[in-house]
Image 1: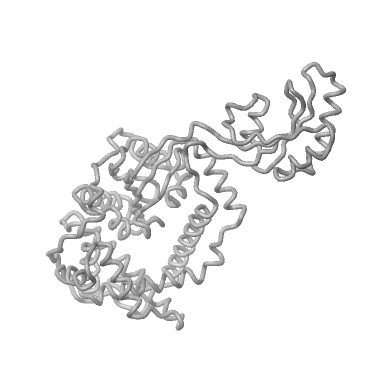
Image 2: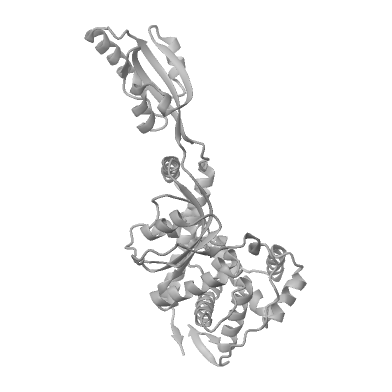
Length: 435
């Protein structure tokens, strides 16, 4: 979701011509189905040096191995049209991994053991319902050497530990940020929401906007034909959600760029979008689920009141108002009722949780806009003068994430952003030469 939200203010470059948003419907079973054994694709390249990353070389053999692994992991079938995109993505991954491996050598105590790599391989095999030996045999049938996958896993695990250890304190989420996100989530609960998967092809990493569009078009075709969305997202997407198989979570109506919002409105559950050009790249959206916003806003209210008939004179109303105004700074939701019982002339009551629309008209504005935990200024009704404590607020019918879920989500976003900046700095400082 972070990648989608980050581009909200960008100029959107989608074409004005109205075309159907959906490219086809995905088969949900494809995510869990065991992959068919790949045939080694018939593409050739020189085994000489293709690139250098500082003092590390990338050969034609390295690139071919990475392309084969990319094809096996995603089940994207190589065609003359998509081979250039697969090659470019494989080369990008190799360059990043060389930089990561070089950085890891600076931290002598950060060592990924063979046993840890074995455990990760076992988890990968388990995800596709195979024994580790069977899984490695599956890769070997596609021409992939075990060392290729093992070194990729070793670098990925080391990099994840390095980023987590180095930036954990900086990625921590403040209480004010959590409170702000909770308020936004509560307010958003009344809007339409979309549970989506996302793939973002970043133009600057694939040779420009047209190359990104061509690559995205090929990926859409492959996924409609059976390539698993999650696997493709993990290998090709530049969005932070790539590490979660493209899972962007629930996206709120109006929180994304116009071109993306249009697609969200048109896609049915289970459908995959056509490529969606935006500033800086191209999105592919998979609509996992939809839900309408909550129709009700529920609040928990407590009150202290001074009874006054509607016919009370202005002096009595002013006196009651002044008394409550003096008392208000001393009150909280926790102390209101006890304070009311301790002073003569005050009445206290807990109104419980109620739909804002069912409250007295004079109470509704306070119930909608006051901060949770606050006590209102005096409110006049035909029954008297009231202080209202807004002690809770939630959307009816829609489950809003709790504080811990919000904190974890923001922490992951912060850590992902810091990791991307780390990689950007390594690239800028590196000597990368393409032969």
